[in-house]
Length: 298
Ligand code: NAD
Image 1 (cartoon, helix red, strand yellow):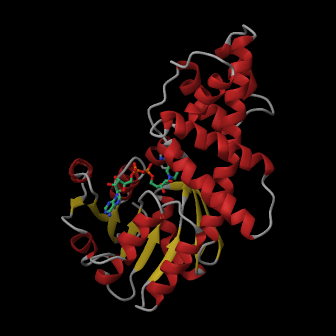
Image 2: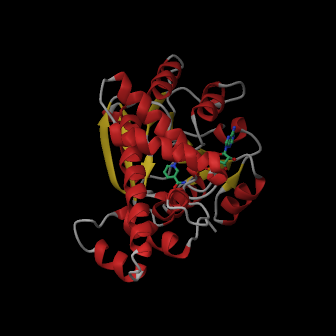
Image 3: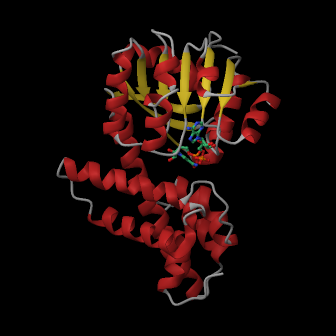
């Protein structure tokens, strides 16, 4: 309990938001949560937080407002929409959007907030559900340096790698690069899995030794068990990674950066969705490789 206690509204208590809000409670802050499903609000209350009946109710009296919702339309609705954050937040408050969205929407939100004397940061995260639960997320932050400094103690309650990467929107640009690297990494791990199985090598032993060498990665460590056991409960849904591949391919195109491998993997993520795997964890890209290999996908 090192940080000065803050009064925080937390909107979006899903796979990521729930454990993040609970970690802010643990760090000594007053956290009032709002979410579309009541069960997640009840869980926050059980963890020592408070429950709200609307965005307006959550935001009343808050000096920091955190949003963690799926995609651009949800951020627009929650922050800019009728009955949303900007209609209800007090001047001088700090809005921190931790969702993964396009840099343009973060910049639009920052401009709309500034007109009302409200400060914003875009602060998307990496590390997955496990990283959120263990409070070891990487947090990439765009916005003013002074606002970052103010929010740093809150970020430190959620993650271990917390870096200010530039002005409004810059956090989202870095997150887009993150999603590119993660998707390509998962895809090649999945290809290695099918290759190793077809070759008749013990998969668990093979992945253990690969994890200790140059082929090792956080993706391999965190997703190995999912692949070996074909356990694809999310985690991070393929639907959301599809959204992120759309963000990174558009953002890279805008700055004339070629993504030949990333574009191909974006197609494979889209194909996974088209095959009905959108609600599975992104480690289920393995199922797409199995289809390509002519295997029966269980
Ligand atoms: P999720 O679908 O589990 O949770 C989103 C939550 O937002 C839901 O509980 C929903 O009720 C709430 N919500 C949506 N609209 C709302 C509204 N109008 N008012 C109140 N609540 C609303 O999603 P998630 O997996 O927690 O991901 C959230 C964001 O974090 C996404 O942008 C995702 O890309 C990003 N992200 C996810 C992971 C992961 O591993 N799951 C990792 C890093 C980043």
